[in-house]
Amino acid sequence: MNKDFDRRDFLRLAGAAAAQSEGRVTVLDPRAKVPPVEYRSALEGYRPFTEAELRDWRKANEEVGAAGGHAGQQTPKPQPGKGGQK
Image (cartoon, rainbow, N blue to C red; front, top):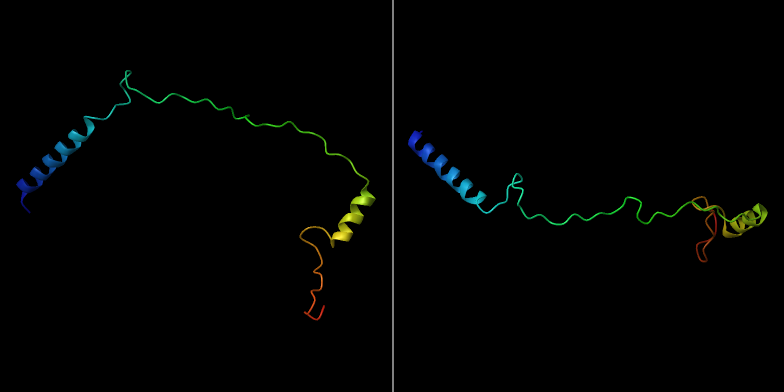
């Protein structure tokens, strides 16, 4: 392998890297323009806890029973034309 070829490539890459950094702002520059800081509270939109309205448990049980059971454990209703349960 030709060492002169490797050195020239290295010098080209170093020159290209140096050319790219000219327009960039360094983090160490105290005069660099930066976007304004936007403060957002972590508690923005917080709603304090409120007690749920209490209801008669018997009425709540009747409503669940009339709906076919608790969500996720409802009994499938027979569909017309399907022949009912097997």
